[in-house]
Length: 73
Image 1 (cartoon, one colour):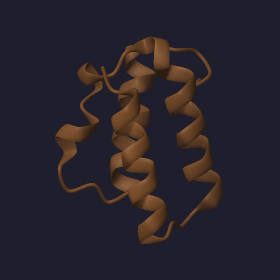
Image 2: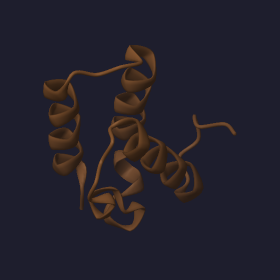
Image 3: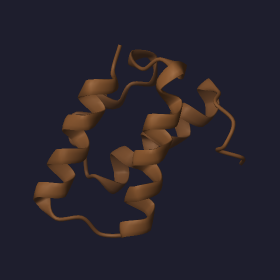
Image 4: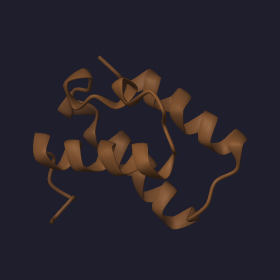
């Protein structure tokens, strides 16, 4: 899968994987329909950082969730 190209399919994949990696209990926070494709690059950047870091502290996890709230529609 080529995640470099903005699409709803890619956005859905990224958000679902982020939910798993961040151990988000309330998955409705990461509903792809609540995000605009114009913010894809921002979301992809956050996803890349999460992948690169591997494991996150509780503080880092909360910070990523807060940033995702800012890019929601």
